[in-house]
Image 1 (cartoon, rainbow, N blue to C red):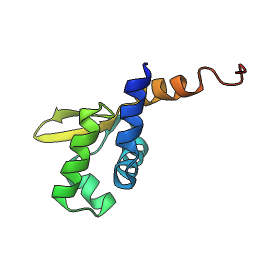
Image 2 (image 1 turned 60 degrees about the horizontal axis):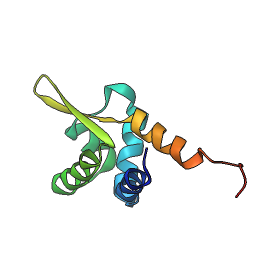
Image 3 (image 1 turned 180 degrees about the horizontal axis):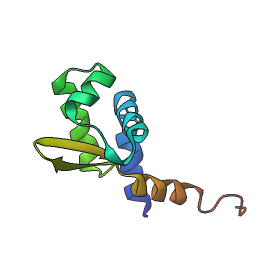
Image 4 (image 1 turned 90 degrees about the vertical axis):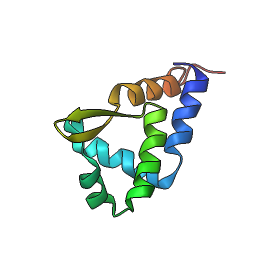
Length: 95
């Protein structure tokens, strides 16, 4: 992962509501949650939730897929794991 990509991911997660949204999806696991389920957990207006989801989808932090008539939202575990690896790659190697 390049520094610019990591910065975009951190910026997207740097908003309190988006971080809460992402952490909720992490708790949901690989099955993810649909919009209605997210609204119930987050108690957030639909338009606000849509805005935050769009920001996280744009940076690939969450992935959306269709499951029947529902759009499911799933945390992109691999991407965030790669970002964590990038952050700690040079840990304790000295300056």
